[in-house]
Length: 165
Image (cartoon, rainbow, N blue to C red; front, side):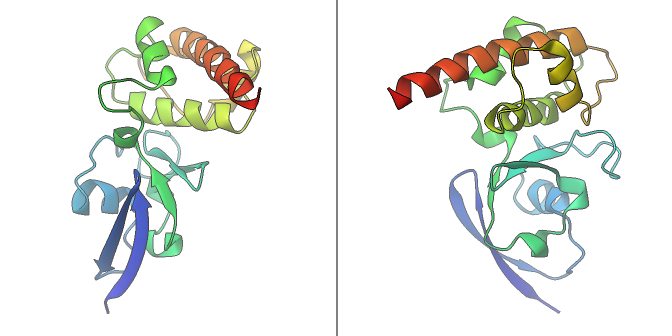
């Protein structure tokens, strides 16, 4: 049984034929679209390594069936930077050593972008840690991650304020 779906992935329209309705967004992104920045960690929705944005909301791609997201707008780590210009969250992760081994970093960055966009980051480190709690870091880079989110929140908050003026 073949199913056709259409997705906008990182700003590009993609029409895909699925030969199995059980294909997850994670497997579709990694295996069919060769977007391997989204990591397969636990494959059970417990670690957050596969976090992507679907229609602006954070989800674990390992738990989402691709067929259920026909017509969705998907943003992965590959679509975050603007050419050579890093997204403010990416730049803040580098500036604050928000990663060590790097395996969880794409999911952490996508979750941080989502958290800020949702307006739930604020400047309280405890609130940020709670908002990012679905993303695990085995290396324990949480202090740098929290600082990076705080910095990016300030930059993105100022950008939004300037655009509104």
